[in-house]
Image 1 (tube, rainbow, N blue to C red):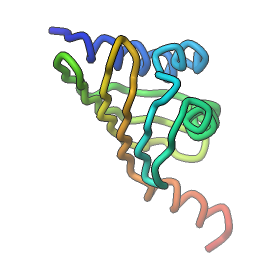
Image 2: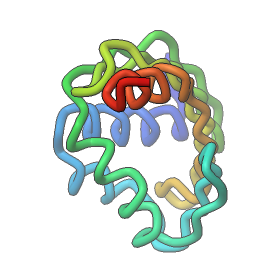
Image 3: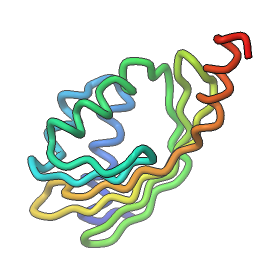
Image 4: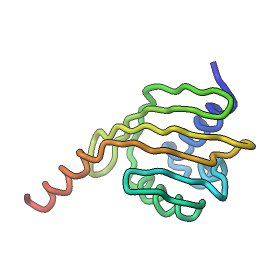
Length: 122
């Protein structure tokens, strides 16, 4: 079963995990507010600067679950990246007028911290 917000969230998710970040950005509002583990980002260009580099190290993704209603959607997934084979995450997406206006990202930073420590010989 789909919903308006879930349709947009899934289109965005499939685009960025499918290595088409430019297509993913077509689903993002110019005035998006993104709440990421490192802090709040405002605007599409700030969001691009945060999310774009992550898509470049992405090697795979597995969508675990997705739910939505008229204005919000929640996706949970596991990503594989060059530095780590498993990096689970979730996104709470708010959609208005067919665009993502707010995105709250939660992900497990521990695998990345461990990979950085291992690379540094710590």
